[in-house]
Length: 358
Ligand SMILES: Nc1nc2c(ncn2[C@@H]2O[C@H](COP(=O)(O)OP(=O)(O)O)[C@@H](O)[C@H]2O)c(=O)[nH]1
Ligand SMILES: [Mg+2]
Image 1 (cartoon, rainbow, N blue to C red):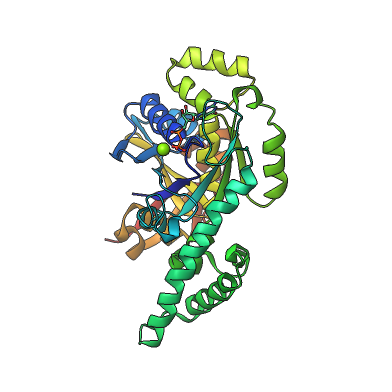
Image 2: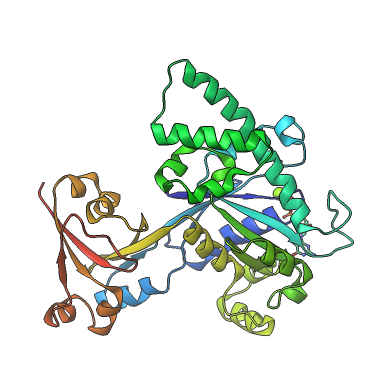
């Protein structure tokens, strides 16, 4: 269902704590949001988006339907996992299915919680996990390249990507930089673990939740091009146990305006290069997820394949215009309702109404 993000990290870094807080809080937040925990380690959560409420108020909608993202708590990754240590290869099948990876890094000190290593060192921990992913990729690409010769020819760009990644991995290099050289469609279809978009999440202690600490600083300077988010999994869990007013009060005390979980969700959305458009009417205001820079008929297809097949045009109002002119009628009066054709690239926040032949 929708886009999937896997949470990985060494044992005891706080993955399950964060996962539980994520799924629990988003469940409690609005009972009418479609939500489910498919398996104990898979949860579907709503993407927080303040725009949807504003639109629905203006459109006088009975219902709000947010867009969703799936999180998977992936346990069992330890040094040697690719060779069967820990839960061994079991975790690999979980990771293969995800669209992006959250690396949860331990940045808190605690005498009680055992790390597999004695010291706190988020970069070392990251490298351990990445090494396992690289070894797993090396193994699977070797097989794929072998198969190709036996007549399973893949598309040319994909073959190039596979071969280049394989060359890197053979030399012990991480092929992640190839993300800059290939189209996202090819990257997404490659099913290569080390090429999946990454979100780096630092699990800090309570005292450094708003300021960060020495460890989160190291992480931030190492990952300049990635989304880096600081959270405290324990605090997030505590927040989920409070009522709305208490939670806000608590957050004020901690000097944070937004929960770490909301930031993790939004960073994931960004790392996946996704945008949102809306449909709005008296029945419902609904958010739809599309790849950024998607053409109107492809955006329509997210609602229904018939919308793409019979696509005629998309009546389009930009989000700012919709708010400023108080909805569709106002925007139309001011000439802000545009009629867009099949080459229109949908913008984040657009309110769309598709016209199509059946
Ligand atoms: N002090 C402290 N302990 C934490 C924090 N996050 C998680 N823990 C504790 O670390 C232990 C392992 O957490 P868990 O979520 O099960 O880790 P996992 O193995 O990565 O799933 C639990 O006892 C948590 O309560 C944190 O931010 N600070
Ligand atoms: Mg766990």
